[in-house]
Image 1: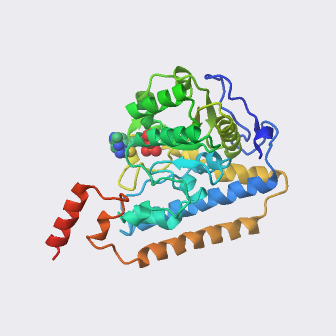
Image 2: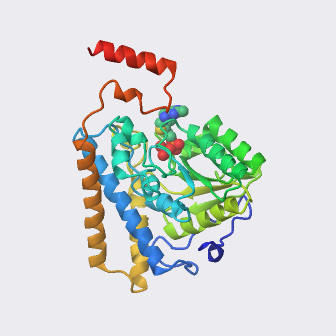
Image 3: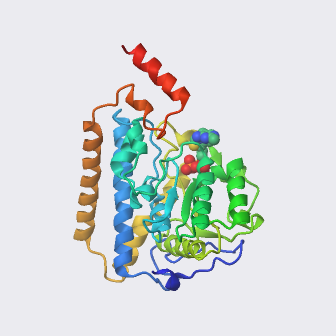
Length: 359
Ligand SMILES: Cc1ncc(C[n+]2csc(CCOP(=O)(O)OP(=O)(O)O)c2C)c(N)n1
């Protein structure tokens, strides 16, 4: 396991500077402890996320997908975080976290289906320990704590990682999840993608704390601010947090500093509530360009390889779209069967009514 060489400094709740390994220009600001092979893997996974994100935005504009929440610019935050996870770990994420979910086994086709209202999207293949995306802001963090607690009781080494935004930290669920995790020492990694906006609500209206990371101190766990567009920094901070959780040292809060360069969803027009100049500035801190600049500086960047990655990842996404669109729609009877192994009496009643209404 790579963790031992990936020690960073998750030691105190408040630090002066966010953890960074690659500058905005892609220059190393400290020794990079990842192999070229790992860096290429991270780049390829970020490229896959971007291909999916752009395709889904286009599909929505064509009316082939319901409202979509783009994550362009947040690829490093998602792909870097899940880098240290294994197939035995859990991922509990939200509507904007498709890259993290895909990289841990949730197929593109399921993610696409879940954006068309098809309940089959919420049923990942057996053995994939990734929960369906939560639309309810914050509620899913509690599930991640429960999963981690269960693993702890079972005596396993599995951890649960949960993703949420800066806005979610204002929800009671965040505080309940953090408190329970701290008290019971659950193996939970809390990953806050602080993209500075919760729809039209800016980060400074969300909390009076200087940082989100410092909130960890109140719950008796370490917290760290990380440059969320630096995939190396994110991977290293996540590796240490996962290692702590696996070794029985309890939860950690990671605050990944990033920016939502696009709209909240495809129905949103951010120009109505914020100065888009900030988005242009943040696009210059693009996580993919930053990593490719570093790889080029050490003679490990091959334009042809990057083109083939873009072609392959794009083709993967196209196949998933074709697969999703080729599925026969569920019947009105079937849409009730995807939620519970044993349907509740209310669902059975609704199912009976739907079948009767539709003849
Ligand atoms: C409990 C709940 N309240 C309100 C909403 C409406 N809503 C959807 S997304 C969102 C903003 C969330 O912002 P943040 O947590 O920062 O995540 P981001 O969308 O920036 O990724 C809100 C208020 C919701 N889905 N669930």
